[in-house]
Image (cartoon, rainbow, N blue to C red; front, side, top):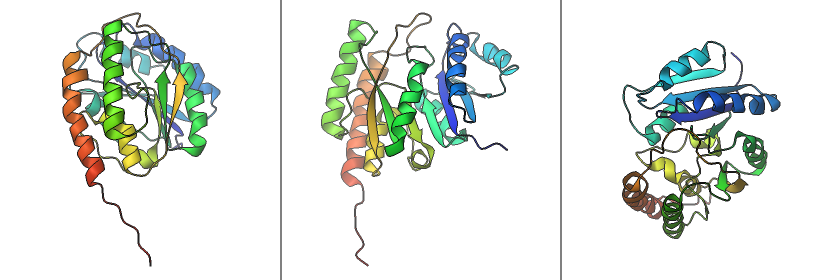
Length: 236
């Protein structure tokens, strides 16, 4: 079996209008890297034509692997399933709404020479004013509590060193705090400016409940983990 260098993970929930164009964008970017790669699309209980479109695309794209959930389990579960099944040395994540720009992937990979996780930081956000306010407020609170130094934690475009990522235990909501969890484990992270695009098709899956109130409870859990993490040094 060919050793995979890069595994791309894309969680999908009702993205029938985006998935074809997104894969068409990703393919030349990944081929330009001249390393073996795979694409894992995790269908998180879609009720539109997303599953059928994925199956059709897979017939002509041997690098595409499809993971289908029985129902909607949420983005943390989708990422966790992808992390477990990915075969690459480096794992790349991005959203299925095409707001992340695949052209930024090589820039994040170049940063992995001296870090364990490279995180995209969206410049000139193309979301509506309400989402920008909620995201900016959540990022400010998270930085103060988690002390991860991240400007834009909510950008899904990230690259992970798989050997480090597999040491992180995933829980519901923890995909939002992976930089903080990496720091807790002593891993190196870096934030890289990336492009951000307007959503052209489909609807956002986020609202004040799943991006606001739930995050507060998750933040308390991460704060507890940071405070209670075991630290010791052996002299001999």
